[in-house]
Picture 1 (cartoon, one colour):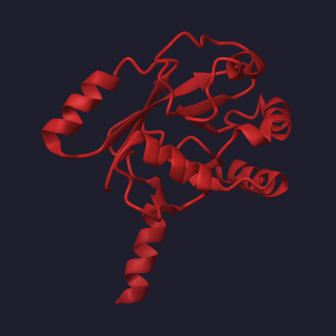
Picture 2 (cartoon, one colour; picture 1 turned 180 degrees about the vertical axis):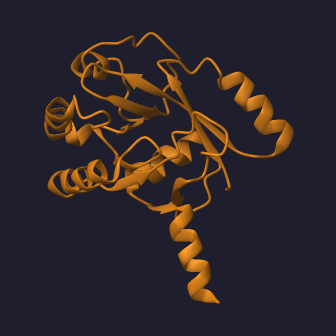
Length: 181
């Protein structure tokens, strides 16, 4: 693992602490937010705003975002199954707002991943993966590999918007290692 993205729900209040830890350890930590819209959680990277989005409809939240400097990714859009239609409608309606769709994480079931991949194809959006690690041992199970080294939040946003990445997982990494033996 070369870096991590830290995304708390509706706040980036931990950004200072993350920057301190990154400086002390030399390990890159990129801070974003997981916005809790009524339709679907949305990852936000590159915003100077650290809170105040509150739980609202995505149409209201998007008015507070500077799209030129930010990248947005619907996170686990169908988790729980109850918001399936609402999340699909959100993604179809605002797909130009998004850099990608999260299709793999520890909070996304296999069936949901298949539907997200279909929706990504329909909307011409690439897919990303993330751990969504809420407990020890989950970090790195699913990940996004970038084509270039990412040294700043601005570089992360640029790479996401340009689609210069691919998804990975612990299982895929093991298979690649076994194939090279």
